[in-house]
Structures are given as structure tokens and as C-alpha cells.
Image (cartoon, one colour):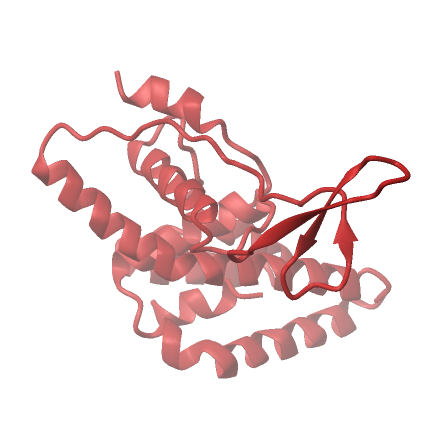
Length: 217
């Protein structure tokens, strides 16, 4: 499973006082520790999310387990998406197929060396969540990414290796039809709101109110 995962990697509180400009009669705010007097304070955007309900303690337990696994692998999916974007940018001007292949191999080797110790610790379910999140971030399945960057034969063997661990590189992220994916999206959006994760624009944005309305029925 570790080999499969290798390739997928490509304010604070302030005190303030008011100062009145006698000429303009505009209220200004001086933030403690800041030499600049401002006419307004920039506040963080307030993100409103639907209330998450649970039917029983078993649902809460399953949600918390899924939350721990999702938060663990999310950053790797984001990193894979970023690496893929940079890889495509650098491959764009390369004309020769052999040069593209050699460069892709170098990137793969770099990723293996950089993340081997961490990725090998992933469980089967964490690996499958990672595969789903890579699709969430890129809009492309891991199987297709491998096929495009290497070739169909290698993608076939990677996928068969993944199947030995009850995973599929062809797995897509679909919170509208798969309940676990809905819960993953719920976990991610709440973690982003609470700044437990760093935001990275996904391939597609999901309306959590819409999803909540569908699944909470």
C-alpha cells in the first residue's frame, strides 16, 4: 500500500482606543502595539455551517474516528495536488516524451524519499481516504493521474496492488451519493472554519447546507 501512496504525492486579541480627528470628525481606532491609526478593523470572515446531529453514541464514535483519519491525510492530498500542478507546469514546455518520462521519474523518486516513513504508517482506511481526497482536490482519480503521467500498464499494476489492500485508485469523492464522503466533507469544512486545517481551493466546492439537508433526512 505504501508504494501506491507514494505516487499520489506529487486579530489575535487586541485592545483599542478611539482618537477623534477634530477636522474630519471621523472616529479612528488605534490598535495597541501598532503605530498605524486606522479608520476600521479588518475582521475574519464568519463561516456559517449547519448543525451536525447524531442519532446515537455509535454515530458519534464513527464520526470522531473518521475525523481523526481525515485530518491526518488531508494535508497530503493538498500537497499531492500542489505537486501535480507544479509538475504539469514544468512538463508543459517539455516536448520529448522521453524527457517527460525521465522528469516524472525524478519527481516520483523525490516524493518516495521525502514521505516514505510517514506514508508507510497509513492504515488501509487512511489510504483510501487519501485517494478520495486527491480526487476532491484535483478532480481526477489517482488511477487516471498515474495513467497520464506514466502509462496504462503501470496504472493497471498500481491499481491491482491497491486492491490487495481493499483499496481502489479509481475511487472518486462524491458526498452526494456516498455518506462517508459527506461526513468527510463536513469534517473538512468545520476544520477549515476552526483553522485546524489550512485552506486549499478544491476542484469543486460543496454546499454543506445542501448536503446536510439530504443526509440528515
